Image 1 (cartoon, rainbow, N blue to C red):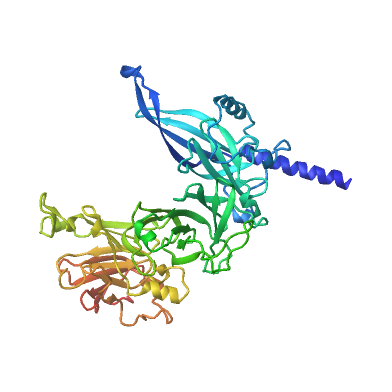
Image 2: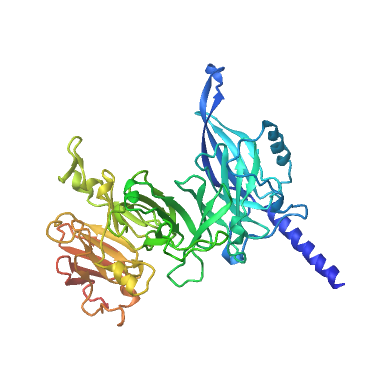
Length: 547
């Protein structure tokens, strides 16, 4: 009776998995440009041919790997064959016969409820976008793809990485997009930490032929020889914040410039989900080192060149790319809304930021032109040819949850800047163990006022902040909060002491026409008047605020 009940529970669990997979929707996880192909034209130019782009669309069904769920849910029926029954020819084999195209048609008839991934070839011309072919993964229906690459010299072949929904382990396959046949299922990753559940999240082809870098959701980077299905060595990454959640590898890139060869290094940049960029030297260890093992085991001993912590925070690194034949690395973030260019010209091979374009990490709530009247009252000409006034083209943007005040130029992006709120905030936040300097910044701005009359003499910008009684004076000329703090004499500056009552929290602000005084309205209906230059109080409205 117990065995029947156990069998019934397993059947119920399997049915639930099938139902979950049946209700899941297909999603596009990656795109690959495979080159161009001749395509017949229609209309007036019928009979002629034009070049069309061949795009491989990688489709996946189901949720991505989630550490909280401890792997991808197990789905599929009993008829799913094991991975060992897949084809095992090497990656450098020639193209199969055209007769194998019929195999693609047979696989397209497989029940969509058991298939977790597909590859769709699209033909993109100037006016049309058509489906050229659909391909599945043969008997490996439990394969759930997440990323793909087209390695150099691999004609008509792509490598796809993801996970197996049965084992919740890394899975890597080689697919011929011309014949639609799955050539090989790689086995070299099965020996690495077999008890850890993960999925492949990033692939990158190395300058060395038949070698790729494979990154997964547990912070490991594997260098794999695809010709012999061999794991060369592995690199591990761990978070320094002490969090239990593992670091996810999001992007990788190999450096190919001549200066790296001159110094005898082979750098690999690894982007992580915690916003850190790690630079490794992949040069093999010397013969004198004993850090390597037998051929059947992992070779260790690679050098960590540098680690740029929390370059893209929050959200982590989205994409890394070394510029060809240059010591320059371009990086973008998932939620940091930033694109950075790093240069590696230091003797210790560490990197520094050369150029950057930054924006708010969350939607701003308050924007306005810096000096709307500058167009009629002069200003610095950004372009002498058309007389564009730079001051009239500068926009103040603030109120975001990132607690920053930024200035954007609609004429020249090099004039964009973030207003400073103090020196050494990054270092101070790091010393205090904070995740970022945002915890040390002022609360989000809810209103601001500007006046250009006394810009050259003192601050020309006053801001008030959420659930805050103080007002702050900024200088658009210096790009910083360099003015005094506007507050009443009996209000404590230290956050450790008694704070002003809620009725004194600022709700509105204005600057007088002469630029000497700032008026701050509060929740209690009282309006405070301050001197912008000195920050001293100059009265209240009404005269007796207790009335």
